[in-house]
Image (cartoon, rainbow, N blue to C red; front, top):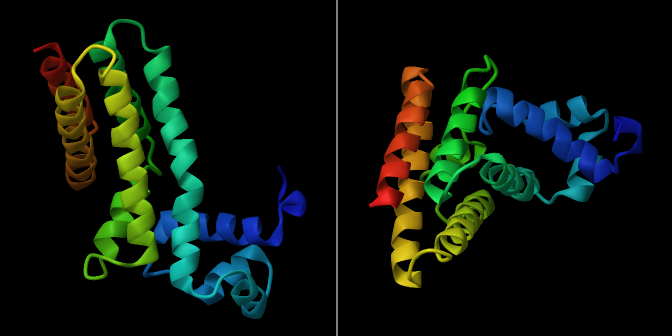
Length: 189
């Protein structure tokens, strides 16, 4: 879809997303988003009550594409469930090798808004992480009792989000691969 066929709301979210990804949410002004979207600040505020609502909307638009990407990587990886989960980590490591990779936008936003646990963007980030965990749990329930599947899903999520943090810190995607190996070992126990 080209910029000219996007709705005004979608143009704003797309512009905000580019800027938020590149610079972080706190560093980006509403003026910069409006300018990048090619419209006035008044028009932006017609579609979003506040920058906070815009940040939340941006994250909400990333929810399903990110989950679908994990599901696709899982489905495309040959082998058993452990291999498939490890495949997600390998794909993330490959993504982290790209020079413009900046980690998980949901986690980055959460860090920037650490003192605002009720912020709409934190709520959106929390919902996304829960959906990923729930999907993973549903996959694991095919082989495990529900309570064990939930515990394993949480452990894999901890490995995943921990790997995002360490890869950002060290700029070494190998940590993502190592976390994937740990997840696969965990699932095989």
